[in-house]
Length: 115
Ligand code: 5GP
Ligand code: ZN
Image 1 (cartoon, rainbow, N blue to C red):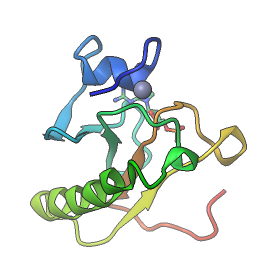
Image 2: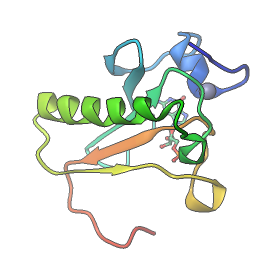
Image 3: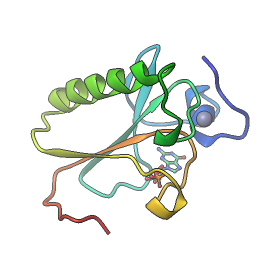
């Protein structure tokens, strides 16, 4: 597992910062967002430090497929039928934590396009 110093989500993976976990395996961790934007809002992150979607490449792309499989299973386990998966890539797109993460939001009506 390749974590990075001074990365908030790497610190959560290492247990240095507590999180309300939803699911965990050797590849990824899912935990509830500290500032939920919907009745259900959790994040899924790879255990290896990837800065954003822009850092996905042929060497690590399997992690992303695994994360989407986990999202489907966790959503089913939580009884979520309709949900939105979001990954902000870069500051202008709204990324505030530079460790790849997928938001899973559910439980309210949503609009499109996003703000
Ligand atoms: P971004 O803004 O990068 O797309 O998403 C980062 C998310 O991480 C935000 O929704 C923010 O609320 C969440 N977040 C930031 N710090 C923490 C933390 O310490 N714990 C948890 N559970 N979520 C956090
Ligand atoms: Zn990290």
